Length: 377
Ligand SMILES: [Zn+2]
Ligand SMILES: [Zn+2]
Image 1: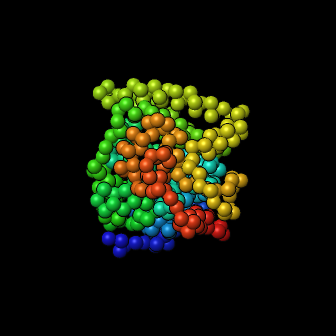
Image 2: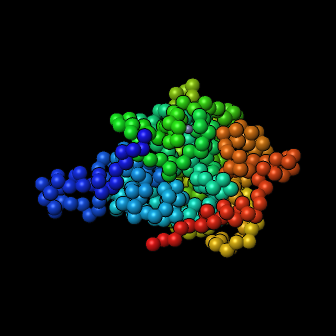
């Protein structure tokens, strides 16, 4: 199915004649990839890369090298490099101001070695990609949200569904950095609603909803953590649900859950404080240390720390985040989450369950070398 892959130059040269007819002076400063779809608000960068790959029939590798990026797209989601927004704007022929949301994580905790476990599963050596089947089914253009790349996002507050991290059919983990050109033709704009390994429809995945009485708790916690993360960046960009009230409160009365709407109001108050321009420097430091207190720490003696600690965070710590309801929600959510995943749900006192997270020094060594950023050219 991946036979007719075109290189960037091939795609580009097919438009060369047209450029010559029109004269050279309108030639854009950067190469364009014609027909590249616009980036959607709150879309993960790697989600857009996968869509460009499918729509324009080029590999993600070619797209990234056209943009001067020499790492996998899921690392870019975590802000390991600042994106050249001018280049991207020229490439998709859009206004640069519509793209500023893409760089919110550049100097946030996500880009820190110590906090890697927020966007990748260290022990599984996999990027975190979660999805809500109902969102993918109802999106006019299915896309993966920035929040679906975070360990702390567990549910979709619109559909109350517990997010999944793998394909229900082939059981493979979702990883959009592995997507390639598709022969889907006119349907390629819906490419992200299908598994990129077995092509099963992710929009039709079996699903479960979170218990109604826990909904607002989980919603509030996950939004709070996402905003804590976002607030550690110099570019303040609140989470989608922290500012777009209407998306939740305008739902049909039968779907409206008042406790969630209330949680959203409280959240709005909180995040407004984060945006206070005079307090930004202290908020960045303060929220970074709040986040540290929510992580599961692993003592380890290894050098590339940015955080002056003696270890690495290997996951979020469920019992610290959710307190007494952690065992109940942990049971519901972990059903849709890979073992050794991005949240540790169980207290040490609960049977032997924490053994699932026992790690051998070798495994940790390998994982840490996987995490170490590639050299920049
Ligand atoms: Zn949804
Ligand atoms: Zn599959």
